[in-house]
Amino acid sequence: MYPKWCVLFVAILAASGGCRMSDQPPVASARGTPLVEREAGAVIAGCGAPETPGIAEPAGVITLRDALVLALSRNPELGTYPYEFRAADARAQQAGLSPNPELEIEIEEFAGSGDRSGFDAAETTIRIGQPIELGGKRAKRTRVAQLAGQLTRWDYESARLDVAREATQAFVTVLAAQERVALFEKLVDLSRKAQSAVAQRVEAGRDSPVDGLRASVALSTSRIELQKAEKAFVGARRGLAAVWG
Image (cartoon, rainbow, N blue to C red; front, top):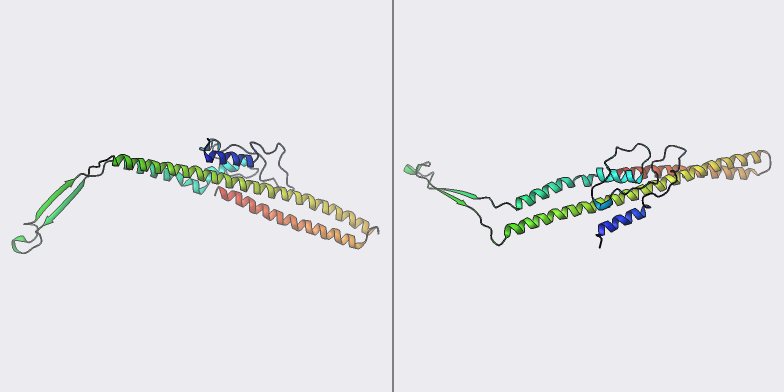
């Protein structure tokens, strides 16, 4: 049976549309280059380290694969795990060592009066002890430390899947916001053409001035919705960038 985290990885890729969501080019925005395009990639295949090296901070179009690579290589939470791995290895190594010997020094009969003033008559006792572990205590302690290190690595794999899920969700949110902006841009263009046509008909006396007012209101409404969509698009882009810090 496959591990649960690999099943989760397959589910993430299925939700994102496999290796490629569409062969069509991204919807071009009339106000600039689109931020994302519908191209995915198996970045977390095998649930190990990313197979693709880290990429530079994106300045133009970004694919889902790029977003996953950036998230897995730059996420602040994941960046702490290499230090935790080193600490876990150090603890496992320390657990396999024998206990350190103990040295005790005891001084008596000093700081008195007369002949016993100072340290002239002091009695010094030195003891050296070495703890002896029985019953396989060292082996058990080493095993516990090794299991703790494995748990840390499983925590890392779980955190990587969480980051990949967040990056995928944020990418889909940006893509949806981008499509919404493109849709309202088309709507504004159509409303502008309709308002112009109605204005000509009103001027020619074919339509009532009320129809011209309605067309102007529809154009203004579509422009307001476009502004809202653009603000949501900017917020979605910031949310995607926040995934990789």
